[in-house]
Structures are given as C-alpha cells and as structure tokens.
Image (cartoon, rainbow, N blue to C red; front, top):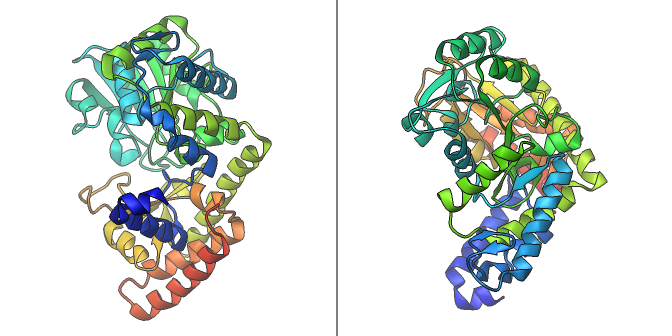
Length: 410
C-alpha cells in the first residue's frame, strides 16, 4: 500500500485500529461500520476539489462533476426521507444544528431542549455549549417516575418562556419520540419545532420508529450512527421559505467549501439505505436492543425507563453502585466497549457518571442477532458485578474473543 511506504507510522496505527475494531464487541450507540463502498467514496480523488457554493452556483471553476455528485446526494435524501428539501453540506451534526440556530434565531433569543442528564444533546441548549451560551436556553426533562419525557412540565415551561425553537431528539433516550405532542405545544406558542434524528434516522427509514416528516419544521440527521454512512449531516424541511434560510446559513453563513468526498459517501450510504435489506437491518437493531435490555434486567441491573424502544439501552447503577466510569473501564478490559453516561437525577460529575449507554447498531451490522445480544448482556452483568476480579475478567475475555471472531466486521 502507498500509505505504508509514505508514512509507516500512520499505516501501523490504522492497522492497529482495524485489529482493535475486529476484536471488540462495540456497543457505542453512536458508532457503526461504514461499508467498503462508502469508504472508497470517502477516500476518493473528490477530496482534491474545492466547491464553495451550491450546484450551478459555485465560486470556483471545474465543479461540473461535483454538481452532479451533490445533486444526486440531495435527490436520494429527499426520496428516502420523503422531504422537499435537503442540504447535504454540513460537516457534522453539531455544525448542522448551529446552522439551524443561525437560520431561525437571533443570539439571546430563547430556545428549548431536553436537558443533558435526561438524555439531551449538548447543542440543544446545554450551558457549556454555544447553544447555551449565545441563546437563552431553557430545558425540559423526564418524569421522575416513568423517566419518559414530561410533556406536562414541557408545556408549562414553554408557555412561561415562549422559546423561538423547541428541540426534539436526544443522544441518550431509549424510547419513541411522540412528535405530535411536541407539535401541539410548538403551535400553541408559535415556536419552530426542530427534530434531531441523528440517532434514529436508520430506524425511521426502516419503519421501526415514527418519522417527524410533515410534523417538525426542520429535521437534522447525522449520516453515520444507524444510517451507516460517513461522518456528515443533512438538514431537511418541507417549507420553501425555511429552505432558503438554511442554505444561506450553511453557506456562506458558517462554512466554506463542502467536503465533496464526504458528499459522495453520503450519497452511497443513502443508496444502500434505500435497499430492502436495510429495513431488515433496522428491525434487527431494535430486536437486538430489546434482547440486550431483557438480559441486563434479568441480571439485576436497573434500566432507565425500564427498557428500550430503539437502538440503545441506558443502565443506571445508582448512587450506591459502581460509577459509569468504573463499569466502562472494567468492560474495556474484556473488550466490551461502552460509554459512561449521565442518567436522570445524576449526582456524579460528567466524567464519572452513574450510568452507561449501550447500543446495538454496530453488533447488528456484524450479523449478531438476539441470542448474541442476550449473551453480551450476560457478560456485561458478570463484569459489573465482579469489577476488579482478574479470574472473571479472564473468563469473560475468552468468551468475548470467541463471539467477536465469529462475527467479523463486514
């Protein structure tokens, strides 16, 4: 390989990472495995081009082919999600959300999103993020008993503060989003409703989660996670007046030239997602998550909201149990990769946390089904209940090795 000759150090590190990915059971809910075709597009000569502007309206010459690539990605996104407009240029989810703010709200105006400990994303108004610094952010949460979104409280807060934007979607919420309930509240106070479907886009395409199309004013999704594409994002809407504002916010408002190789890889991923097999994949992701949740529950671990309806499971160890960091570190030693995560009513610091977040997109892409998800849950319980036991670690690591080797990365 050319890379091996040019830069053996980087080549070796990439090889090490490939080996690591093959040896672990990856339960990071936001990670997945892109296909070889997606990666070929991502590593193509399209990375050599600069293309500020939009198709037919570029500031650089020589974009005839790039225009075709971007138009194809846009048309595939529109068809797949059933929308009238799509912008495929955002570099990732957070810049895409920033563009939505830039298009629809002025600094200092009130915005509203799900609080981080309740499962929300940083860009939905959390205090340390630009969205919580440059906007007057108010947060809604979950019901302390059910740990489902508290719509009664959300409505009260919305009536009191009258936010310009209401964000739906989350980074750590394991249940179905009831889009119509958000729409009713947004209409009552005259707010824009924004649906961040980054985690569940693939499930929506598969028909295992309701779509916000026709309900939310603007929809944003990343293109990796359950969609299995490259690291990028798409902003969508059915409202023509908002489409023009979004285009202007992305370019020239926030970005220069788009990453044309990423645009091509997004187009490939969207084509793959339109194939019949992708729907079966999405259904299996949810089936595996439910099997994993049942296994953890039977092992005595407490699940936030009692279970899952999507691709992720949240485990809450409580104040008296191990921290999320301790569990994450223990599982890492046996090659089960998870991430520590805040939980509702969190009492520990963000780098410690009281819980972990688990997801099934990556193991499903590898071909694992309910029986493997159940077995993985049993191994997690064994480690969490025996943190620091070298004998248990050795036993579980062998089982993980057998499992991962039986399901190679496609």
